[in-house]
Length: 165
Image 1 (tube, rainbow, N blue to C red):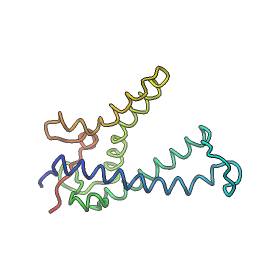
Image 2: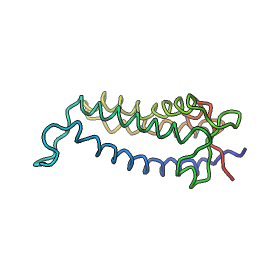
Image 3: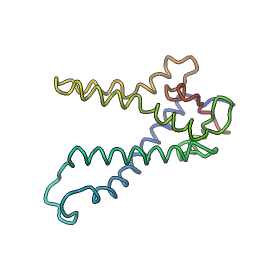
């Protein structure tokens, strides 16, 4: 099995980010009336939901994204960007992923964004919130120093992105 090249994998990540953003916008749009106070039909001004509501929305979207990737990465299935860029996700032995490995990969993919959120929360009060952009790409920058050019979440989960011919 030939591993997919770094440029191909990064292009797939960008495409995946666009599709996932669209899916999460739709989910958020559908969930917002359920968690918003007041009438959804009358909108006089834009209001930001309170913290508990934002946490509920985040958890719902986190779970929906986990379900989406868990389904797409298991049983030999692929996401649309993986099909477009002719890539497949396999375990160390070249077999399709099981749900446990897919979930570990999904959680490991949150290392960079999680560190970015923490960095932002800590440095925003002193005016350095923009520094949070650095750890955001940690999972993907790891491929530059990894001997096999693996993303951090693939290294942790024991998965490989291979070229599907």
